[in-house]
Image (cartoon, rainbow, N blue to C red; front, side):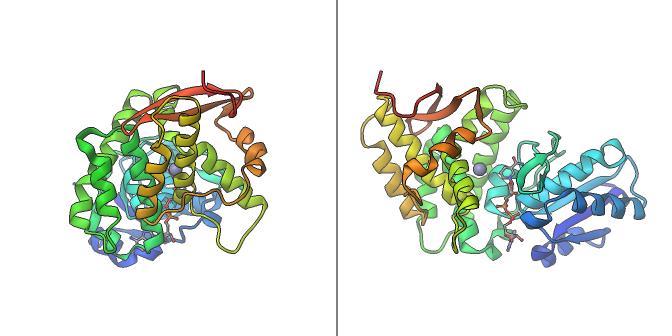
Length: 317
Ligand SMILES: NC(=O)c1ccc[n+]([C@@H]2O[C@H](COP(=O)([O-])OP(=O)(O)OC[C@H]3O[C@@H](n4cnc5c(N)ncnc54)[C@H](O)[C@@H]3O)[C@@H](O)[C@H]2O)c1
Ligand SMILES: [Zn+2]
């Protein structure tokens, strides 16, 4: 690949990995946290690209977690009306989720991901060895999204394999690597069939209706140790399983099995507050339209179904 048209933008927390990867190409460090996931940072990236003389033929590499790939993907999509970008995701979450799928964007004031576009990276390269430096809690957060993907599509019994690898006290990255590739491939396949989230892609929201409500609750009731996104997704998947059981969509015991598996992987499974406190936030979720939630429910591990619900407590049909 032509060296001079590549520009590397990286999370300063993965600097040594990023600079090794960059091999002397122009590189810009950014502070990649939610507070900096803003238009200001996007404009800083665009100014830097301009100062570097980046043209329409530029390829921008994003090296970092989901904050970085979202930010850089968005900057690349508007710089000179759009240049190509490639992702080198460095968190498990971004390897199986954020770095795959083409959603880019930034926060607006306290609203997450309010501005953005769908623009696909020209490729996403997964280098599992970078996960060795990732804090354990971040790793588990990504694990929840990986397990979510295999609850949606469990070809090759990958859900069971992932639970086994992720529940070891010391994660074997060589054993995890093919599972990361498989999870990214499942997401890619779903997104290719429904890039703009009109139907099929919605199944990727498994666990997210409750997760977003938990995140909203935590935002409005700050605590010292809020759940991470992946942790909230784990709790949300157990809630989805409980609701699936209540509606008679799956065999009894599914929620208990999920609870056990997720706990083995170091993830929480209980709501951080009484369920009634989440009710308002559930209906506020941006996935709810006209009083209806497109709720992703589970028929069995490997098969989900989307039901439009206007009442979470209706009895089994
Ligand atoms: N575009 C999408 O489809 C999509 C999907 C899911 C999430 N997201 C977005 O992704 C973001 C969350 O992504 P994330 O969980 O990857 O978080 P992140 O990018 O904030 O990374 C988490 C933390 O780990 C650090 N880090 C990253 N890689 C590291 C490594 N290898 N070693 C040590 N530290 C490392 C980061 O500096 C940060 O402090 C959110 O902003 C969310 O909105 C986007
Ligand atoms: Zn998620």
